[in-house]
Length: 318
Image 1 (tube, one colour):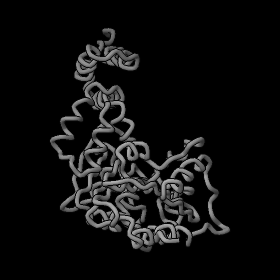
Image 2: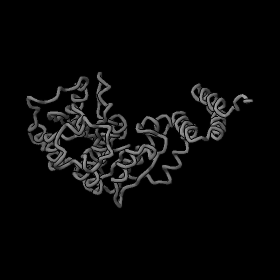
Image 3: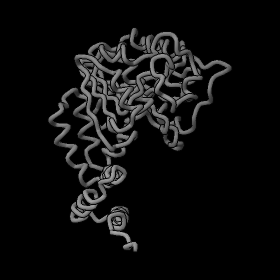
Image 4: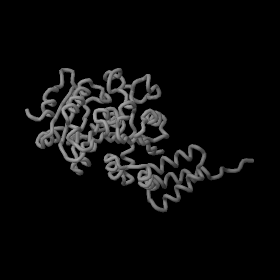
């Protein structure tokens, strides 16, 4: 076996306590191997490499990646392949925040076998749990670009006592060793984009731990935790993602693109609901009426009705 990467892949095999392989992976495995890539399966993850040119994207599954069961692909796979870029997908069999020792060993082995050195540029990419993975393994490719949507920084209790959402993840794997705290590894990036909703206290606190001279925070208030779907509804996810993965996105560009949120109904509804909760129903109604002149949406109509009812004077009392 001449290719050192395929030699690495051949060294790893799932053991008797391994998680079952999820359905829908046969086609992507066949494509990767037919194109000169490799398929590496560990106890609880799969590394799926499809060669390309110019840039390698290392993408990481999130908690909802297993919803596709007919033709499952790595996170962001189609967008990466459309650019002609290479893709190393980290696919989860067990949602353990990439804390399987065998996976960590495989990631180190792939890096040492020279995969990253084959490309002029390397980017790591993911959302939520996948964003944690992107920031966590950035140190294996110093100088890479990181794009992290709503990342966790770690699940180690002593470091993030505020994190109460993912207790089951804390119970999987060993959180005391290497590759457990993304706050350290993200500093090796040449540019790291950390996007989060500052209205979500836990996401804001995780982002506050992810700092460094090359880390750019892009707060997205009222976007909630699932940021890529909101950017998709705004029609800017592709442009935003490609600029960031190239390391070419700056804050001014991001702000220009994000102006489209004014007509994105999920964002508008979240913003107006927050205004109403703070006692600003009149201002919320005025804003809702302004949006309604541009966007026809039944949920917005219902909210306008609720807001009008909220500010209507009640019956006089004797």
